[in-house]
Image (cartoon, rainbow, N blue to C red; front, top):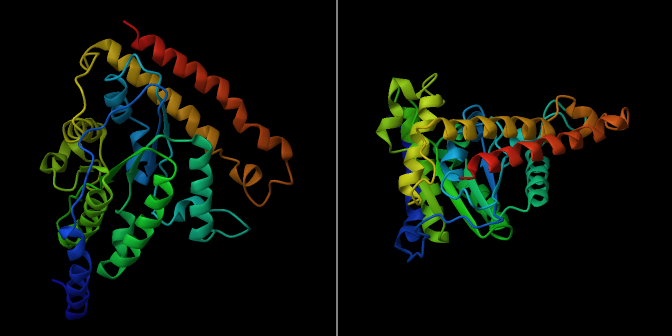
Length: 303
């Protein structure tokens, strides 16, 4: 149960977002990808753990097999709309400041030139409680302002509910999910609401009550197919060809992960970059292998 102080803050917050609900919106109705699109997955653990399974990206790839679409996963575990995770290990600090992380995130996004961005935030920020709602809304709006100047289409993803005995976590998380939903409505962006999906709470869909399992990501892919009103698949997801596409996607994304998040991070991007300059050339060496995997994916997609 919320204490009196938190209840007062929550009521005040309700007054703040009420005008948003009254606004007329022109929210996008369906996701449509074009030839030459560059799609970026940006967010927290939800997208980083998706790298291990490939279901989300595959669910999009098999619907436009004839189009050359580039996908890049920029998910970072524990990250927030403020960029906390992306600031680690800089300037001789154990953790750099969030502003540094946010700027680094924007530099990375700019380099990828995305035309479509999927955004998954809200879970880590929810640990700030009711008191953090206004800050989250402000941080989300700052991020969306920047993304709207970069891309033609944005898709917001609400975090799935957690499966725990104490439902007070979901009580708070639901308010953060609502901010994401309101942002989509007021700004005219697509949204995938995973928070209200009971099917994701099944034991098989979770690894630890917090994170999705392989089956959970497979179910999440089915959900966003429905909510984004995606066209029918051009390759049957149940046959071996589709699974080969998914395995190639996983390999491609693993290579890209090491390209932008090398283990010797301090020597490439951090405070020790002047000690071993050769290390700064190493990430670029992944590019030919990433392109090789993308060619393999396109070959598998051909009839």
